[in-house]
Length: 60
Image (cartoon, rainbow, N blue to C red; front, side, top):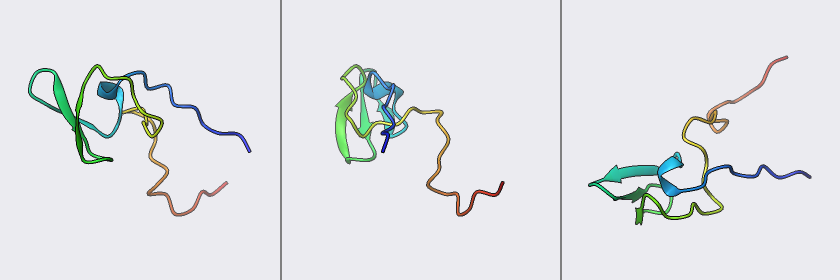
């Protein structure tokens, strides 16, 4: 099975990042404070990627 590799390089580009102040922010997935420039973790998802979590069925 193929795995999807994240192309998010830093926390600030992740869907779960919320900026707070000038350099820091919040990871809403892990509920922790992070720096915007930190290397993104393996759970990161690009900010503008489609969300498949809310799709019930895919019709052809």
